[in-house]
Image (cartoon, one colour):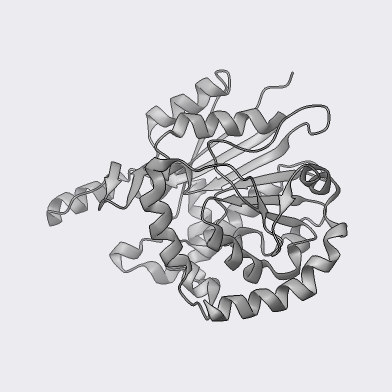
Length: 309
């Protein structure tokens, strides 16, 4: 923790002095928000009591010291796959777009934003405040320019959509909504703050057919929905969730995508998630073969656009 405070102090001196250079849409949005002394914005809203155990667990994880953030990330996510997915998402957004990343954690998805889309602004929210301290270190000077960080709850987003703020152009969320017991409320809030024609993309763990068979053969439990080990809630992506997203978006067609076909840490394949992994780059392209990917993929995503007025 001392290490984090030292890094944070050094960062505070170098980056938050340029807060006036925030992306224009992001700057306008944050005019009605308040930032703490470390530059992290706070919604000042309470958090759901039924997730208190998960918040405590994730605060303990965030308190760990990490010498190499990307190496730590690659144990739970495929960096090559998600870099590819981020690029795909950014390519669909208009010039000067504003993105809301729900549950953005360490913010690593956006570390290449200045090179890929210097016109885009991103607001990262997370309900574990310590995660946002890590995001400051991962993203460096992007915070205070193209990116801002906020401690907030996905089920009660602190944004009023009106003439002053017309909504986000894109909403991106990765393996966050799967941990929220009230999935529908989180999606409803995302829909509310999304501008007409805005794009919503949600990634969750997939109910992988092949893995269910393997777990059964090994006599192990394959957890699909409910509280895991008394510490956190998990609900894998399902057809029921897909139908719920479609309903909230006015019956719109929801596109399904299956990713992380080779990246499976529980089967000893975590090495494919490293930043420079050739297998990881191959994995990123396997989503283009849904007839194969849906049987073996670790993730399933829902993608849908909000109707025009």
